[in-house]
Image (tube, rainbow, N blue to C red):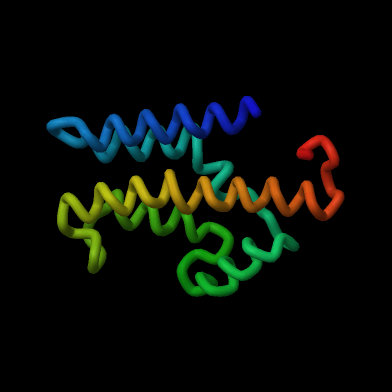
Length: 120
């Protein structure tokens, strides 16, 4: 549960940075690298949802697809990421929705598959 709270705090901190009058993408990248990147790149091989996503994004980072997408939004120079509002939304959606979804799905899969009874 502590890990879930830490993720919430980190995501909230990134959302706060995105809402600043002057957005510091360097500070957002540093926060992600220090507090979320390891979880985003954690190997969940064997978990059905993770396997599907990594297969789909094989040419775009494979198991590191969340970080690759996040870094495209941070850089702001790829198609679809050049507009400031688009960049902010993609950063938020990546850390809040994509990362959060995979952490929840991973926990549920481990619980139902019997790999970790403590998750029940």
